Image 1: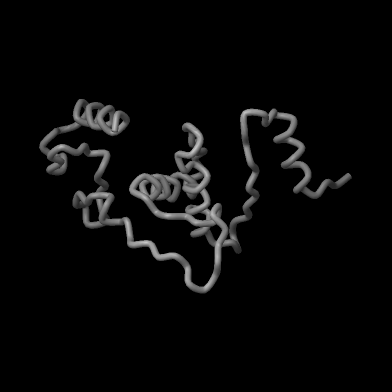
Image 2 (image 1 turned 45 degrees about the vertical axis):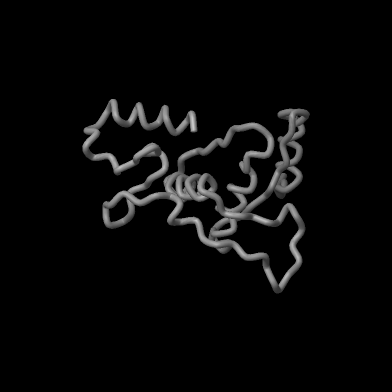
Length: 140
């Protein structure tokens, strides 16, 4: 990918290239460092997905893990507990919402609350504020 190549070039420019994984035609963007300190390809984290047999989910509820979604869920798992803000951008249909939903599905709901707010090109700041305020108890 274009982003992967840019990432690879920047990483090589600021570190010793001998520390890189044996990437072949791929880039360092396709790898992560596992807990043992070794390079591991992201594709090793993609598990075979099976359609749920016990329920009949709607199309929008089907969350299939992909190389990219796993990579981004991992980044969320590092950033969110550290209190760092996260913003996903991209064209429609690139799995931004699905990736966040995958991450949220793994959270402890005793500690975290969620509110899904749909955004589109017509979402104004006022609409967003009203949506959030409608979920918050107001005290006077």
